Image (tube, rainbow, N blue to C red; front, side, top):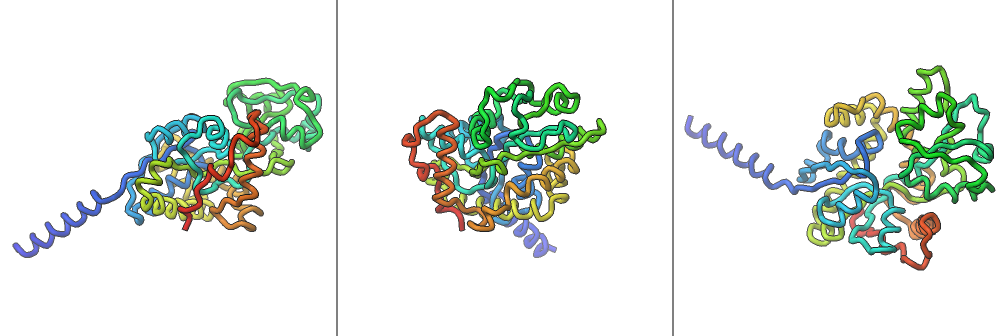
Length: 326
C-alpha cells in the first residue's frame, strides 16, 4: 500500500513538474478571433504547443499598429500582423519587431458587389459609389490597385462607414461596392443569401496587387533571449496552420471551444474561403513558411508607395528573420 502510494505521489510530482516546466508564450492577435485566426487556437486544442513544451496565452488586438506596439514593448512575445505595416513602422521608427514566417502569401484586400449590379471587374467601378471603413489598411493600397487597372481615386465615389455597416449598405443598394478583406466572404455570402441575393468578390491579388500580407511576427527581445522557445513555437504553429486548412471543420470547432461567441460553421466557412491566401502559386514555388528576397522587396515597394515613403527608407531584409524556420 505504502509502495503504491509512493509511486502515485512520484507520478503526481513528475506530472506537476512537467506542467511547471512549460515555457509561457504570449501570442498577440491583430484583430478579433475569426476563421483566419484559427491556427493558434488549433495549436492549443490539438496539443501542438503542448508537445513542444509551451503554454500559450492569446491576447486580443485592435489592428496591426496595436499588435506591433504590444510586441515592441514586450507585452507580447509573438503574434500576427501585416508585414507591410511592420515595414512602414521600421522605416519610420525601427521598431524592435521582425517577421519570422509568412501566413498570407497573397493580400486579402478585395472589392465586393452584388451579382445583380453588373459589375464584374475593377474597371467597371468607374463612376460607381464604393464604401470602405475609415481605418482599414486596404485604404492605403486602394490607389495602387486602381492604378493597376487604369483608374484613379476621382474615378470612383469613395465613402466611409462603420465596418459593420458595409455589407448591409451593399445588400440594400446604398452603395455599388464595398472594400473589405476576403476573410469576410463567408459572412457576406450568408448575409446576402438571407436577402435572396448573391455577391461577387474581386480580390486585389487577382488584379495586380501581389505581396505578402498577414505574417507571424516576433519581438527581437523574445528571439534573442529565448531562441529555442521561438523555434519550438514556430514549429508548432506551422503544424497548426496545415491542420487548420486540411481540416477546416475541426478547426472551426476548436476555435469555437475557446471563443464561444464565434460560430463554428461560420469560422469553418471562412477558413475554406481563404485557403488561397495561405496556399497558392507562391507557396507552390517557394514552399510553405518561407520569405523570398524578391517578394520581400516587392512587398516593400508596394508598402512604401502606399504609405508615401521613400523606397530608400528601409532595407526590407531588415524586417525579416529567416533563422527560426526549420
